[in-house]
Amino acid sequence: MELGIFSMMKRHGKSKEMVQKPENICDNDGLTEVPDTGGNTADVIIVGAGVAGAALAYTLAKDGRRVHVLERDLSEPDRIVGEVLHPGGYLKLVELGLEDCVEGIEAQRVSGYVFYLDGKNIRLDYPLGKFDSNVKGNSFHNGRFIQRMRNKASFLPNVKLEQGTVTSLLKTQGTVNGVQYKTKGGHAMTAYAPLTVVCDGCFSNLRRELCNPKHFPFNLTLYVQIKVPSCFVALVLENVDLPYANHAHVFIADPSPVMFYSISNTKIRCLVDVPGEKVPSISNGEMTKYLKTVVAPQIPQELYNAFVAAVDSGNIRTMPNKTMRAEPKATPGALLLGDALNMRHPLTGGGMTVALTDIVLLRDLLRPLHNLNDAYKHLQRFYTLRKASWFDFQRSKYELIFRNNNKSWLIIFLFYLQPMSFTLNTLASVVYKIFCTSSDPTSQELRSVCFDYMSLGRMFADGPMSIFSGLDQRPVALFVQGASLGVYIAVRLLLPFPSPKRLWQTAKLIPVSVVVAYFFYCRCSFKWHN
Ligand SMILES: Cc1cc2nc3c(=O)[nH]c(=O)nc-3n(C[C@H](O)[C@H](O)[C@H](O)COP(=O)(O)OP(=O)(O)OC[C@H]3O[C@@H](n4cnc5c(N)ncnc54)[C@H](O)[C@@H]3O)c2cc1C
Image (cartoon, rainbow, N blue to C red):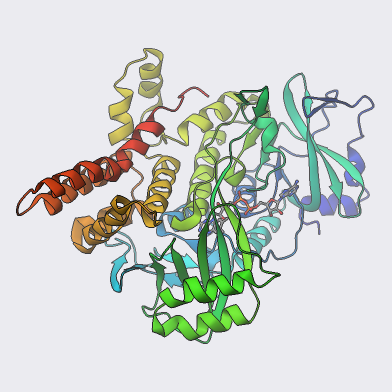
């Protein structure tokens, strides 16, 4: 499938063989050394047309760039990832001009979440009071959404969307200047551009080449540290309604949460979190047994029959939930984006919101550049600023502060900057930790305290939901919530009389509850100059 100006060129006798394969190719640290042919066929090569790649292709092409997208499989994806887009992510879609991609795909409005614990539930709506009525959360088939974005991008005349699997990055004197790829027909090809953006998702093969190596004992070198705290087991429920329409439902179950949300007019997705890297085997029936004996008894009556029917249908799929801090190595000519760059636990559904926010940032950084050969400085800045967006802040002041090594950056970071990746990544780690059972009674107590805290409503519900939905990206919002939770714990446990047992519980709980502050501290210690 090839569309746009490139296919027109092809019709007029110019094939993609326009760029000759260089003669002296040799491997060097996973990168392939090639002479500079100067024969760029595009301004930007994008590897992968998933959420990040397709949205970026459209965005850069709208800014007049010639974009060559290479996607391994252009048919509609059928995956269990990226099905809930929070309002914060939707606002980014609007900024990119892609909001119509959630139309015509049976996307369901999501107005908020309902959390269940020990037979009680609380409904928390997205705090959308300040926004237009069209701002909303959405849930949908991920494949339909991606296909809409791919189509929208490929209609632009300066986008070439081609099916091909990128096998390596090409470089000249340390600068990435293109990619080597295999076409659908299995032919090895090369493509050149001053900028290559790697968006090949959570199983990225190319990220290793663009990340800082980590050195471990016994001469072990890892390029990225990926953790798999749990896996999602996915089912589709049919012919049933969720107890609360237009809400995602999270059951804080034992040993870990179970989620339900609509993905079309008739289908409900169920994601069962199974802690650890391994899930019970589907083939020998262990999975069915696990779902029926461990999970089903915790599912409320309204959904129970549909849940068991979904298990019996045998349509059970699994996916590892990976987490990975962004540890990119600023490389001239190349950039990582989306899950290839950074991953967080998907329980809070923040991945697409972070990716779309990063695209807005990248677009704005590249916009003033006529020639992407000069993009290196801006790519470095992208990695720094995605953790601390600069648009609410004057760049000159920002740079001055760093140059002078002035510690007042912390205050600026807390109050003024809006780093979506920071807040959503932190929230995802904290929420997942709190919602999982452990044998430690302190953590069980923490779950119920957090639940009761959110049940207080008003700012105690709106605060966490603003962060959760990507509407409030300020680190200070996280900090305030962490601190206020700490105070709530102390008040709840120490009143009316602070018995020795209660004092001991509080002493144990507060440090745990202020896990938010802990994560906050850890993440504040990142390097500003990657
Ligand atoms: C179980 C699960 C549930 C999730 N649920 C949500 C959710 O509800 N909401 C949310 O916001 N986020 C969710 N996420 C995270 C979200 O899916 C990701 O953040 C998002 O899909 C990242 O987009 P991406 O473009 O980086 O990767 P992808 O969307 O995975 O796209 C990568 C693309 O690259 C292509 N590709 C790979 N290798 C190559 C190659 N060598 N050459 C060419 N093409 C290649 C692939 O075919 C694919 O099309 C979930 C994640 C998981 C694991």
